[in-house]
Image (tube, rainbow, N blue to C red):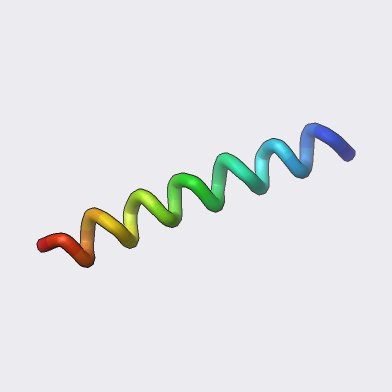
Length: 25
């Protein structure tokens, strides 16, 4: 269960970084 939550946090961080980069352009 902990592994899944950590993976979800990593995925959320990646999505946020991608969105922030695309919004800056």
